[in-house]
Amino acid sequence: MAEAAKMVMYAWEGTDKTGKKVKGEMTGQSDVLVKAVLRRQGVNPTKVAKKKKPLLGGGGKSKIAPKDICVFSRQLATMMSSGVPLVQAFEIVGRGHENAGMQELILGVKAEVEAGNALADALKKNPKYFNELYCNLVEAGEHAGILEAILHKLANYLEKSEALKSKIKSALFYPLAVIVVAFIVVTILMIFVIPQFTELFAGFGADLPALTQFLVDMSNFFVSKWWLIFGIIGGIVYGLMELKKRSVPFQHFMDRMSLKVPIIGPILEKSAIARFARTLETMFAAGTPLVEAMSSVAGACGNIIFYQATMKMQTEISTGTQLQASMRDCGLFPNMVVQMVAIGEESGAIDAMLGKVADWYEQEVDDAVGALTSLLEPMIMAFLGVVIGGIVVGMYLPIFKMGAVV
Image: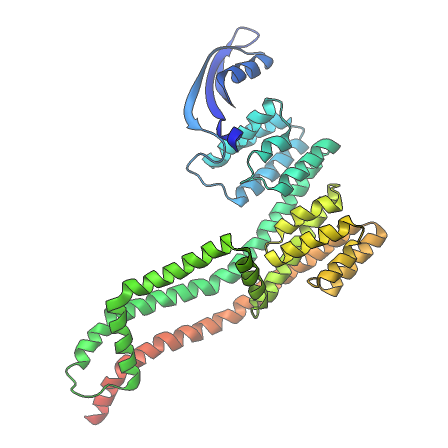
């Protein structure tokens, strides 16, 4: 990334071969290199001035999302299929992008390619946006002279991968959002509403029902210790997030436990298998050797249990073990998946079989997410009804009792 950080945008002016004045913008590591590139393009530069705006790495205020990389890949593949030269395709896609950060990134890669670097090398300078799998496939496409076909495969892979991630996020976000909203509502009731009832109950001169007394005590604790409650919750959430980032044993524990959670666990497992199959299919179709492909496949699974199993499989395969045997030994893949891979190995069409496995499990995830949403809706309504209804009933119990006495 050190070299990428030096890339700067320059504004230039000059004359073309006919003597006509021309001007534009170009990225480069120095004005000397920019002038050299311009001369190779038939322009006699008269002025090259550095612009203040930094270029690579998404230096602009706009954030670059995985979806932006997905759209860029599809646009670049379409441009090249239409016969547009690579550098010109980058120029068109980059200048036309609405995301300022993405525009800077694309034009920065274009400058590297213009300077004579291979596309894969230019992309490797931005590992935050172009991962190992992406760069390896582009490199394979360049060496084999099939870059256009590889870009189409990459675009297909990224589109399916993003669609799968979106389904998983929707499955996890819905219940989490409801829990957060319920906590906020309960907090508001505890801090602002129940104290009003407490003042009313103080004049009753009688013992409160057990439920009401419990809610009053909880409210008093919330009012006096709200800062402690929010501090503890925030600290726990932050601590768990940092621990998951920094501790491999904790990641292993959390990912293993997540696979055992009812309903959610099977969805995460199917998602990991779908990613494994889809990534390996894409790598095979690009002509990447199996042993080399496994490291990229491991990183794409999205679960450290599958990651470690895939890396172990890579070691076994490098010593001559068949893929199907290695998959069976790790114990993570259903028998149907292993059998499909075995048929693919025997028939020499393993990429096609992996594609069918990926299609099957992506559809399974889609169906499971739909079923989960249908199941959660009544459960969440019941949960909210019990919590909020319990608080309301608890607050009105003393009033009901007074009405009965009267």
